[in-house]
Amino acid sequence: MAGSPCPIEVMKQVIDRMHMSEVEICYGMTETSPVSTQTRIDAPLDKRVGTVGQVSPHLEIKIVDPATGKVVPVGTSGELCTRGYSVMLGYWNNPEATAAFIDPARWMHTGDLATMDAQGYLNIVGRIKDLIIRGGENVYPREIEELLHTHIGISDVQVLGVPDAKYGEEIVAWVKLKPGVQATAEEIQGFCRGQIAHYKIPRYVLFVESFPMTVTGKAQKYLMRQQTIAELGLQDAASTQTA
Image (cartoon, rainbow, N blue to C red):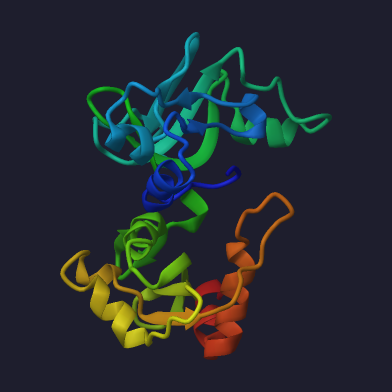
C-alpha cells in the first residue's frame, strides 16, 4: 500500500485478516527520499494505524500556517514541512519549481495538511489543493473518507469538492459498494448524521465501480471533479468560480 493515505479501518483489517501484526506506517514523498516519519511496532494501536508516526532520526519537521509560514500550535492543522539529509537538492534544471517547494532555509513544503499531537505523532488530514471551502468552513475530505470507510457496505470512497453557486463549493462522495450491497444517497447521508458536523455531510453521493487512477495507484480527484461537474450539470457554477 503506497502513494496515498490508507484509511484506519483498512489498516485494522490488514493487521487482522492478513496477520501483518508488525506493519508500520511511513510518510514521505519522492522529493524526500523516501520517508520523513514512521510509526513503531511498540506504539499503541491507535497511534500505529491512525497516524504516520514521529519524525525519523536526523530529520526535522514542522507544521506551518500556509498563509503566514508561522508554526501552528499543537493539534492545529497546517502545511507539513520537512528538512534534512533526505530532502532533494532540487528539480533537475528547474530552479523555479525548486524555489516553489524548497524555501531559502531548505524546508521542503510538502503541500500536505497535517496535525501534530503532544507526543510528536503526525496525522495527515489532506492536501492543500484538495481542501474544500464550503460556505466559509474548511472541510478536509480525509475526515469524511475515514468515517465512510466504517460503513459496513462501503469498500472504498473518495471525497472531493465541486463548485456551488450558494456555498462556493459542495461536497461529493464517490462510493464503491461491496459486492451484492445496495444503498441510496439518502442512506449514506443518514449514516453521516450525528457523526460529523452537518456541513461536512456530502451533498451528492455517486455510486461507481471504479475511480480514475494514476499508474501508482493514486485517485485522480481532478478528473473525478471534471466528471462530476459534467454529470451533475454544474458548469454554470464552475464558470462563476473562475470568472
